[in-house]
Amino acid sequence: MSGILVITQQKNRMSAETLAAGQQLGAALNLPVSAAVIGTSDAGEFADKKLDHIYTVDDPLLKAYTPDGYTAALEQLIRLKKPQFVLLPHTYQVRDFAPKLATRFQQVLVSDVVDFRAAPGSVVMVRQLFQGKLNADVKFGGEAPYFASLQAGAFRAENAVRADTPVSVESVPVQLDASKIRSRPEEPFREAQRAVDLTAASIIVSVGRGIREKENIPMVEELAKVMGAELAASRPICDNGWLPMERQVGSSGQTVAPKVYIAVGISGAIQHLVGMKGAKTIVAINKDANAPIFEVADYGIVGDLFEVVPALIEEVKKAKG
Amino acid sequence: MKIIVAIKQVPARDSQLRVDSAGKWIQTSGLSFEINEPDAYALEAALQLKEKNGGEVLALCAGPAGASQTIREALAKGADRALHIEDDTLNDLDTLAVSRLLAKAAAAENPDLILTGLQSDDLGYGQTGVVIAELLGMPHATLIMEVEKKDAAVRVKRELEDGWFQHVELPLPAVLTIQSGISKLRYATLMGIKRAKTKEVKRLTAADLGVELQPTITIDRVYAPVRTKQTQILEGSAKEAAAKLVEKLKFEVRVL
Ligand SMILES: Cc1cc2nc3c(=O)[nH]c(=O)nc-3n(C[C@H](O)[C@H](O)[C@H](O)COP(=O)(O)OP(=O)(O)OC[C@H]3O[C@@H](n4cnc5c(N)ncnc54)[C@H](O)[C@@H]3O)c2cc1C
Image 1 (cartoon, rainbow over the protein chains, first blue to last red):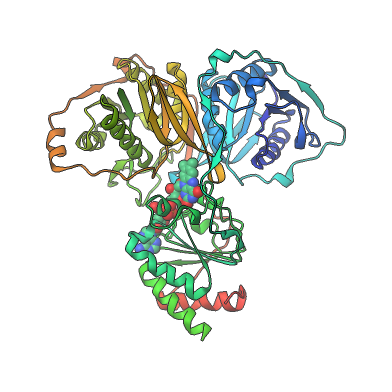
Image 2 (cartoon, helix red, strand yellow):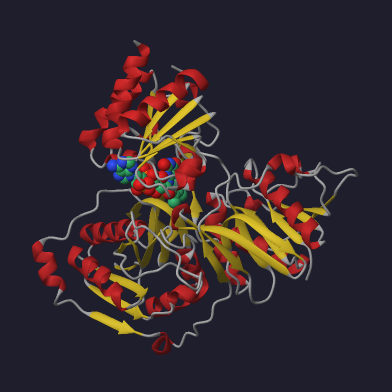
């Protein structure tokens, strides 16, 4: 077995990040890198990247995503091409099928990888534990192929090397049996139109579970008001109905890039960070000096938000005169 | 409908974590533990399905002896009985090995539905439910927000990225991984706590299940992440720190 296979997901920006990571791993291990495109015969955005091959896997049964269909198709591709490493973007879709695919090979997907250290004969995957509070080095074992999925934003798409010569595109036929596809997916949909557009805000004050109770929300609401900011929240706040869903920032909410993002009592789980990492300046107010939010913060106040927020309201009022 | 809910015990959410002396896991002495948050929602979903459609809810937990606390709580909330695969070495295993244990124990019960949380707050691999489904030859769906029982099927609402959703229908038996926050969690009543004491907890070992405890992937080292960004920590009392922040926002960031 040899080589690295990157399994892409159409119309998902994380595919290009995974491709760049695949190229880095290939360079470190001296292995050729190929990409697989599923559900279309069009190599699309990957055609200009430096790759050994692009494999397109197309079939009417792959038009709509199902874990059964994707797993069957990719199992056949992997058995045919025998890569040593299979890399995937850690998208919601990959979370859905990749553990199943790895199990077919008696393997375990090393999921949500943020970095790796690789030299011939030694590959270590780095991933987070405890929602980002600790890191772990993970080693593969057993027989290849070795599977890993990569966290959003952990590798830079713009590092992907372009091809100097056209990449060979090979269509790989697969045998799929409609009766073995057990789930019936319906059309994806969005709930009611969003009334709040957080993406236009230049200052965002965002509140997390550190606020403890619904009754305490008005305090951050006031901070937002005096600062002329939009109010946003982490997911648990919206799940509890303390603020409407449309104010949620993160992978299942809105992605924002304001001038200033002030995170109040938010721990900084990756699903939240992907929604606000693009802010120009990030301020974190948290009582836990080890909270992962400080990984991305430009300014931090380590303290009790119930003391800091009222003080901040006063100081902002003073500064605005 | 017979529903199995796989639950895991993890360190309480705001725990201060320290790496153990071997550098391979955390120091667990002195920590308090609780049910993995998404698993609490899986249990809630199971109890609601039972209330609507009748049947039985079984809590299935692989963990050390101390996990019996979390199992009792599940029984107190309304699970009918429990299976405890007792083992102290599960931290050295990986998802596949643990899923083999869970799948083997679940299969003996012939469930219609198996629910798990979508990921654990400690390891966070996010795979156990999917791997159990594959081992048992059952269909599955992940990141589930709603479950509706049909004749011999379930219709579920899956979460997709960026505020998108999708309905999927699956024939039973099936495995679902449940998203956090999808409903309000119930508290155990006094009556429930009393009754939990009389409910059956069946203890099993890996040997009983005939599963070999052999990991495929291994954690080599656990450590505090290295900070890549220079965070300016604004020191002092709340008032002093607030004043410093306002100054930064006014004169350096220029937004006030
Ligand atoms: C598939 C998936 C999608 C998700 N999508 C999203 C998403 O879109 N958006 C999102 O936000 N999350 C999302 N999540 C959830 C995410 O993983 C975290 O659980 C969530 O972001 C945690 O929210 P939090 O930081 O408010 O709460 P916690 O993690 O509980 O953090 C609370 C923080 O408050 C601090 N604190 C407590 N009391 C005080 C005090 N008095 N003063 C100061 N600080 C205090 C604590 O130190 C802690 O750091 C998703 C998860 C999954 C699995």
